[in-house]
Image (cartoon, rainbow, N blue to C red):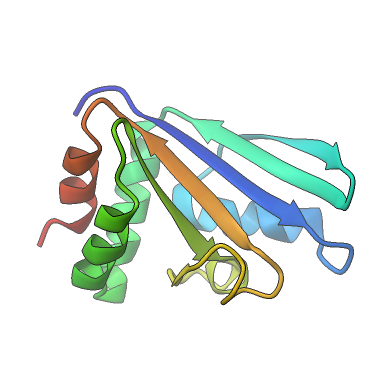
Length: 131
C-alpha cells in the first residue's frame, strides 16, 4: 500500500477530559502525535500519523465488530479524489468499539472526524473492509 496520512480532529467540550478523547482516538488508531488548538467555543484535539499500523488497528476493529459490510458502505460514501473521510462516535470509541456517525446529529458531544489521505482512497476502503 502506498503512503497514507491519517488526520484526526475532535472537539473537546467543557464536560470532557482531554485525556479521554485522546484515549478514544488511540483505541481506534493507536498512538499518534496530537496537539490542542484553541478555538472560540473551546478546544480542538488534532492528531496525525502516517503509520500503516494505524490502518491495521482500525481494520482489526472492523473485523472484530463484524461490521465490515456496513463500514464499506459508509467509507465509500466518504471517498473523494485523494481521501476518504468519516466520523466516529466519541463515546463508543472510548469504549473500544466502532460506531460511525454523522457530523453532529447522532453525537451530541460531537464526533471524531477522520480523514485518510491516499493516492487511491478506494484501495484504503478495500483494505479496511476486506472480507
